[in-house]
Image (cartoon, rainbow over all chains, first blue to last red):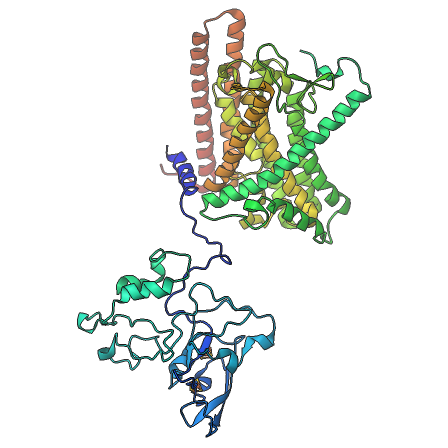
Length: 234
Length: 400
Ligand code: SF4
Ligand code: SF4
């Protein structure tokens, strides 16, 4: 029945799963290292991490960060350092989410969430200011009216977690080298790139990676495992 | 048989009212059918492509067609500078009108078995459940499908633009070629029923399922009709007329707004009408078992179900088959379908004569099949030889 096999193929598809999802209604989980909208982090005592050094602005290839540093007022310092960033703006009409600012920052002040669904309707809203970028007292990002934060987009916002080891040395692979001072936004370290079992992380990465990552999303763990190769790899 | 009993007692205003109301109801059925069919096609094709399909307007996206229609009405009506305006405006109507007119000859219900003539009693008058029953029914069908070519041809020509012209040239060549096969396969049905009227054709199939023309003609004319009908409809896999990759949109490239909508409407109207015609000619129209309750309802139900099967099949074809190449299309039409339809017509003709003369039907059948096979071998041999010769004329000696 050579000619008619094709008809069976199309007919069978009716009963198989849909590959599209009803997007605005349900979100697909994003990759762990997705680069989204930034947050400015704080220490547990509420101090801002940013010291106004302007390294992020200097490294930004899109020239979309504008930082002005100022000396901390001695009676009420904003950051533990000498200076603080009293103006901090990111223009999201220009940001390419390359994450270079995150890597440049000496104090882990700026990191990225997984949110990319923020549809502002004017230029003013597109330029995020310091108060909009700063996390709240609980360490969670501020949620602006035009942002869509469903599906765990605000997980894992704290600190630098883009590499297996912040200082790049294999010996530190898989060790927690970053700080979730506000007790929020840190995920378990990943297994090392070397694949050496000696250097394997102390925690159960797989379980942790699946847990908070998928929390709040409509898709069951492992369903789109191909998006997250490290889940299988680790 | 005589015509519609509605006209038996002369024509008074009640009869006129009857006809008008029937035409309106027929039109409504087709329009609702089109709205449903567009939604159905989009949903089914989405299912076959693992997508969800329209789901925003109304429950399960049922109102999507309506939304699209309203949108089209409010779009700006553009026409090209070089367009021949009166013809450009006329063409969409020439496309829609035949599509609906063909539907008027389809009996959508009525009880034909047990000596009934399919008439229903309404307001003291007896009438048939079809808008019109011209004595030349089948010829009317062929005439209308020819007129539909004008809509497409004129649309392409009057656009004053190259893609529409190419599309419409393809369309007219395709539709004219397949009309021959279409007509020849219907002749087999007409031979069996002894009438051109669609009502009589349905009445002749009223007995058991063995009386349905698809079985009475041994399936071949049915298959030819289905293929030719798909080509007449310009539906995939025969949608060369509007092959997007080659011709943008084909004949309606330059159309916008509701004028485009009317071509779209005509296309789906034609699909429904053609399905209804196939059911009428080959599958006994409303014939089917009555399980309980009034037989009239069951007739309409069976008719609808059969039409639905064909509508689904058209969508299924579209989801499955890639488009034909133009020369393949012409080969299939002229070198295969038309000879086959002609040959089969002769077989059926021999059977009819054999019946009249009292010949043994199996001997007649076997003899005519042998002749048909010999003729087929001769024909395809001749076609092959001709092709070889042409190739060697063009490219020198062909090896193997
Ligand atoms: S992610 Fe890249 S482009 Fe965006 S602000 Fe940081 S350095 Fe600039
Ligand atoms: S965010 Fe980091 S790099 Fe940028 S100014 Fe503040 S401390 Fe410096």
